[in-house]
Length: 407
Image (tube, rainbow, N blue to C red; front, side, top):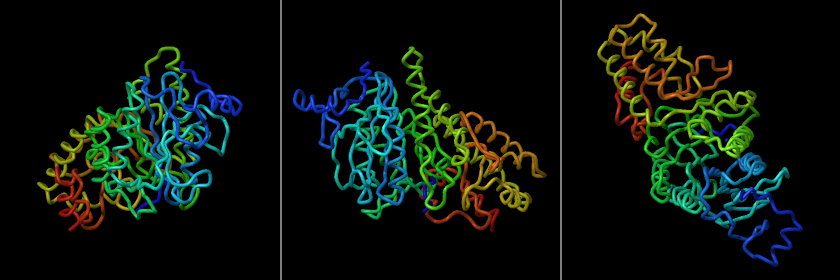
């Protein structure tokens, strides 16, 4: 597993004096830790931004900081901001998991927003729990558009989200089950699925989750640069973007899902010390990418005389972590190499598909050949046995091609 590198009601936040008054007048409003019902419940807004902060692990302090950043922006008349935040037994302000409705609060180092559900000791890496809770909040805080940001460890096609108390790490198929449940309970597809986690901008991940979200924002590389375990870095970029989006909506500028996804990637350019790659992709084009990747794999297998060249190109392809390499860079190298015309044509068709799939991409000079989408690409043998569980492996010849080329 890879550590995460470390993502009017014009209601101003209640002061402690106001809170004390309201405790007498209205028991439903509080900034204390008791569970409350906030006035915004069932109010329809333009956006619901939901941070799923799975901090029952060694990232608990970093994920707390992410939540703290988001609280500085908080909800407004056009935006619900909500977080399911688990701190396990590690947390300092609270233990275990709570759900917060975030109001704007400038204080650093403390979450002052009201607790709308005290969840206790839960398994945030359980698909049923994740899906049900996300779906319930989608119903409770209705909006035109929904962005869910999942913040924790990430390991690409191997999965994401670790819960130490329950010794559980979610596989990609677990995540698929969770999002399917969220869509079922919430009654609509997510507009944006954001990953504040390492290595999740993979073709395999997008293909697995394509039926449950319209756009996905994720990193090809490890996030953060401050040692091991890597610190959280997504919170500041996300809060900056959401503040701008709220200001736009206040003057009646509609911020569509594609706009917001693009804005998040653009904001990453301000955090190059920690964010080396970030991309937004259109998941409605995930089938096209899989189709063209499959065609390229077939073309390579049709031309065994090209195997040696293809194997060499794999070794030269931009690498991020382990066997995760850039799919677009691989296709570019193939299209400009001494291989058969069939392979070149297939590589160019894949490049065209990736151009449709990648809405916005950012990378630093540390990864000059990043194009926004990585893929499993070992330089020896084929992918591991567990790779066969991914839908991408089942529906394409990619793994079969790698086995043949690397044999």
